Image 1 (tube, rainbow, N blue to C red):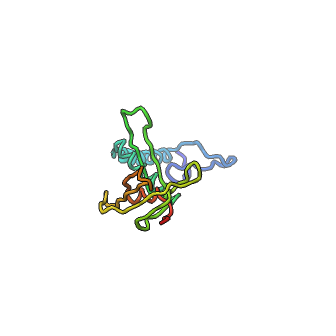
Image 2 (cartoon, rainbow, N blue to C red):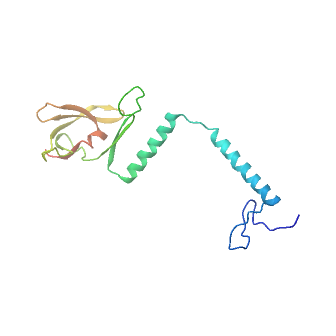
Image 3 (tube, one colour):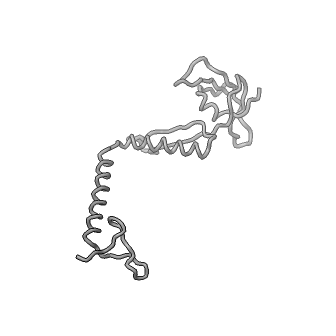
Length: 166
């Protein structure tokens, strides 16, 4: 068999005709290709041996989505995720990010974080409660008329209120 020069195992070499690569397969090149294919398939087998459930993959990608979104918009302060409802007939997944619109500066009256349809903002009375929920401070939030009231953790409160008025 004639001696031919080969750059490295499995790499093609220009054959000198218009810079095109040679399609001649020598024994040395074939052995190099077999070694490369064997090494790559061994890595594929090792990777595919690790299996994850659909829920684990969902949780991982959701965490990556949140991380990327918060890097793009540092004002994101709270997330609301409605998990997959296999028996439901409505949305399969809902992911909502809320932007920070205000900070708690003591008990008092705060404007709402968003304008209403008429350009006004609802005024809310905010008071700190002695309780904690999942390690976060808890607040009682009511309209000045007392008609609407809710308890919010601090991370959600910061996306709900605006500036302090009184």
